[in-house]
Amino acid sequence: DTGVSQDPRHKITKRGQNVTFRCDPISEHNRLYWYRQTLGQGPEFLTYFQNEAQLEKSRLLSDRFSAERPKGSFSTLEIQRTEQGDSAMYLCASPTGSSYNEQFFGPGTRLTVL
Amino acid sequence: SQELEQSPQSLIVQEGKNLTINCTSSKTLYGLYWYKQKYGEGLIFLMMLQKGGEEKSHEKITAKLDEKKQQSSLHITASQPSHAGIYLCGADLGGSQGNLIFGKGTKLSVKP
Image 1: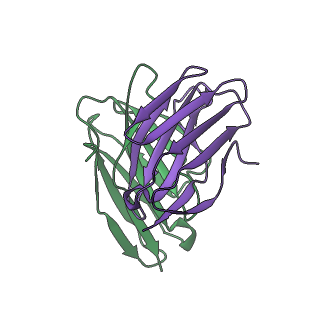
Image 2: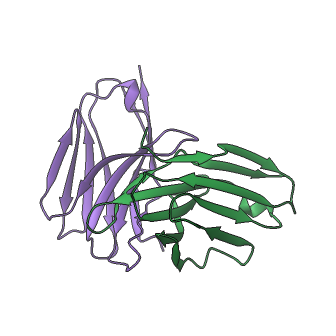
Image 3: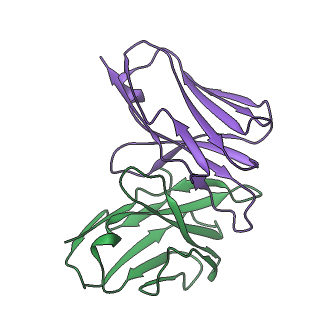
């Protein structure tokens, strides 16, 4: 157990529906990262937060994706009008260390879009 | 092209055998991180290497960083079925946002 939790662990949805995932990082960690991992690939960076501020978004994050971290603690990732290509594992990471790259990952949310 | 290349892509070894997984970067490495992932689960942090020539060990797993070659290797001694999984290397390539760039992973199977 890394201390990072994600909910739900699995989500099956129909194309066109909206979905929302939640990440609870290690408490007092002020940064939080979201990654996406498709089958046979390593995780790819989506976005990150410093406290409640979203500081960077990857070009992978289309307009249908939105992420929030309203109180600088938990974060949510919403996908609107899901497409089959959104099927992936969505991972949240809670980093520590002086350069924030000792990253502890949650168990992930596996999304399947039918 | 992939910034981090891992080899081999998959590996099947007999229990008790040693094995090595390699990770090569096309860019300067500012830090190299090894993770293990079981299918359908999150990443488990194994080791972090930051200095050229650095070598770290945990139980039967040893990782080394060759800064000149921009390469790291992960060596498992006397493999066990519990070592099976996907091994991922992640790198800090100096980006301002601090995220890691990952290789595609090496799938390890250990036959009892």
